[in-house]
Image: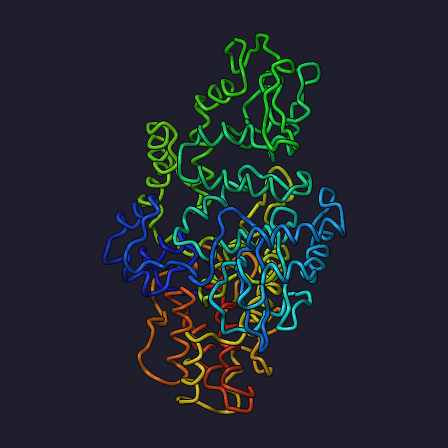
Length: 593
């Protein structure tokens, strides 16, 4: 695969979910260093991608609804207090909410959506005195997505209620929607990074509400001070349950957290079993009280005796043990190395990593300082570092939704990330997801292509509808084999199966992201949005919306061939547009960042 080496586009691909030509042009006017500072501060600059604007992002993760109206149009918003209470009352009558798991919760909430009291609270009769009307997002121009399993309710349409506090899928939808809508993508990428670094799974925690609480903690400290973050995580309710802090008592210390906080969170290897035992004793006495929702410290269950930890002896507490660990020489290279792998990908040399470690340590463990040093380093901007990382499943789904202005209104994005190997809020083990090539195989590629097909099949919104009309201005070859380069001559244009983007060198197995394949612009097709008309102009605009900035000549040829295919290969121009969107999202370049 041959694509353009553009340092500004490369920077945006790594710190945001999308980098359209407009974003790149705005960033180039500002300069790379200023873009980095704006991203670290959460200060959008003129022309920067602001995310999908429609609807609301509820930072409190309150219950929300999606209502499908006649004709397939949807409205969505946060439930009012009255509607939420009515929904939970109806759910409680159907099932004990305290024991509800995800599958049960989904069925209960679907049944609650049919309850007359819930519908009345959500959609009171016109003119009802004192009726509480929920915040309703702008009605979209698209029908309900195929993945939405709405419950029947009011005669005017169907209604589905999602409660992130009890339903893991709803919690995943809530977080993915934040990623899609955020004007500060770097912060959400760091929340994703910390979720994997401090990997905690709902499969053991058993509370989506506590997983969201931890997620909010990561958001608060995403770009702050690592010591503050580590101290907060140590007494986070989900972490106390996950690594057995709740059962860590003076008479019977539990070593799980004491070991993992060193090996996985702060230092890597190099500790001793004696250090593990001392750390476990230091953290005794902390527990989460589910009745009050608070973490409490029980001094009677805390071991206040002397402990030796990394050669230092004293009556250490948990916070003191954390401070001792963070002063070890291994900490800086360990944490900076994980950040480097997430943002750069290529193995760092000592010469490249050293200044980043120095910046991090000298700043007092400020995460912003480490990221600033990484993102402004010569190694980060080198051509050998470009196109070397696969998008993880969440990045793939979110970038596709942001590219085409689609909010998260049904479970499809959440189920897709799970099928692709990244079940948000439920990593496989304490080590998190391995990432890298584990994201790409025959099965996950097919799932990526299938998601692209289902997303593309949704009726285009107002911003995309004119492109379908542009396709009618046929230009270029219209021979019988025009679409053969993509293999996508089916009715939907949905390059199905594992050959979905064959002929383009599509993200195949082990070689797709190699640094050597990311050479300079020889043979590169420009993706600047064309002001012309006809199929090639549509291809250019779709590629630009997808944030590819540069695609290989092979990909450009395949897309153009499909766009110029004769009328008999697809039934309508809208279907042809859907086929093009599918192919763009299935292109090898879209799998990389």
